[in-house]
Length: 456
Image 1: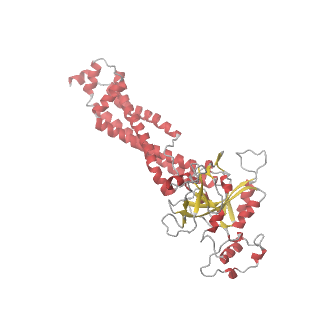
Image 2: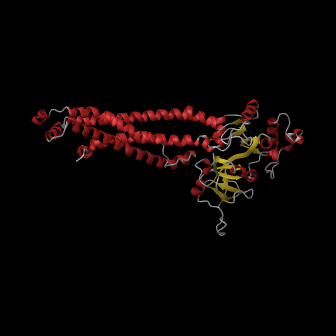
Image 3: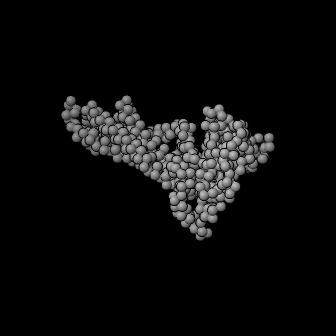
């Protein structure tokens, strides 16, 4: 019979106390694994790996709010930009890509966010060297939609399949303020494309054609209000529209109950514009555009809009807030594991007085001192490492269990099968802890006086 078998039988004799001490280790490891996995998922999500553009242009305000709203759909928009300003950016000789985003409304089923945009968005990489893959035809007219994989799965929506003509595409309507709102729009949109899973917030987003977004009742402001805002934005004259410069906004007041159809460009607004700057032909693909610095500096000097590199505010958020919280949680769970180790030490050490005769019999039957010492160490290892393995499984089980709830409440996609490399250090750490915990009880067993213990 080997040492581990003997140690296991000894643990079975004290099944209740051994189970409780091992469970304490398992709970500590479970919490640590959960913290590591969830932090790793959030860290990857809020990083450059999920962004396929260099700048987000929006109204002046919080850069973090602009990024959270545009990229992760977690905040309300700051304020809209004139559509004419988007056209300026698009025609800027320094700009390679300019993709408009118009945020607002949600799906009635599931409360998924709606974004009005153009087909160019799906040409951009959603991550370095990762392109969108869309099943279906994509945008064909104004009331078409492309939906994320999670939207399709949760709502059971499908696209029309050319191979089965009888299979019709799903349709849906939009509502104000989320799924609980009763302010439902009359316009009906048709699902023309379903994105392959990306592991980004795009999976829980519904994209509609920008023209369809502007055609929705309630998405057009009164012309006089729009013109007033436009003149405040363009203090030196509205580009290309001298007629508007001379127009009195009061003359454009709509009649009561009037709905404006067929908006002109000057009446439209966008929430943000995704921008990539042009690069020289031989410029490295993974390096920032040489135009980027000047472009950002120009926005900092202006007052109309801001251009935010999405990496910067998210890096600050992860380092200054989320990173510190992670450190505190890891330290706390580490202390829990240490306390659990102490409880294992107490359990084994207190059992030594009851096991003196058992140890003496083993010695009398020929067991050497180092053998007895090794058995005690083996008990400590089994309790610590066994609890650690159970804790790792429980930690991933907890992540698996809470992933749907977190996704539903926050919109964050959590991969329940995610693994963090730092988890590999947990079990070696437990082996070191078990060795330290088992030394003192092992030395006690090592020094047992055989004759005295048998006499007692």
